[in-house]
Image 1 (tube, rainbow, N blue to C red):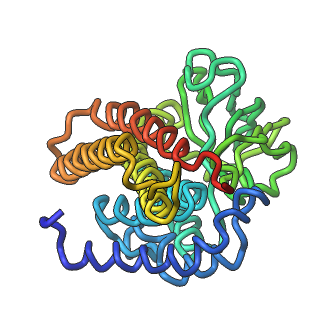
Image 2 (image 1 turned 180 degrees about the vertical axis):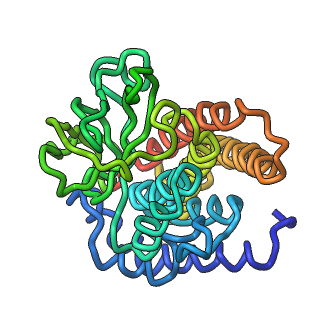
Length: 341
């Protein structure tokens, strides 16, 4: 990608070095323990990774989305779980607060997130309707000077967080109904984090159910308009989708690099494995598909930055690139068969 600026190349190279030295040696541990070590979070925070996409006035770096995607891709080469966790902290949660929050809310939340001091989570999906908000049962209603939230969520990303951005059906003091976004703190009475899901992949990114039993929220815990906040942060969702697509590409590229090294070292059927013609085809196809996905993603990201992106592109990228990278990884894993022989 010859069009990258010097700053973008520098961030990419920094992330690649960090991934190689600090993340890759403990990548298996992250998945087996289903936990990102605190010391790794601290090291990432020291490099400014948590605040990469956050505006400088709130303690962030203020980098563009291209840089964020480059960093996510490099980290995912070493650990897709760590990259996925960090992408939520870099993009989805802080950008939602920047878009919807008051100045008081931004100052309250963003500097501590940018420093890695207080992790955030984003929760929308529910048992009754996944991401179909029409079926959601979580309710946020007025109570005195504040509000009460009752309900339950599934698949909350980064369940070990301290600050949660929660979507739910809302009602204002005039009785009008809508769909809003609120801030729930881990220590709030009536809030519960249940055991994490025992997932097949991304095990180091804690995911699980959370619930709210008559949790009281101050008026300053409402993000944006009580009736529209849950709809009003499309730019945060779009940038988050694109950044997560970058982790899919990084995962596929990281496995491709390891597989290529492996087949160059192994002998099979009395020959160097790399000389077997079918494997050459598979590797060439994998390389072509990863390259095509990368071009599609960064073309969309540049359009996003320029304000010319079609609104459906983040979903197209996530669906197509996610499926393609999964298929590539399945094919690459097959080349490791009988690895002990």
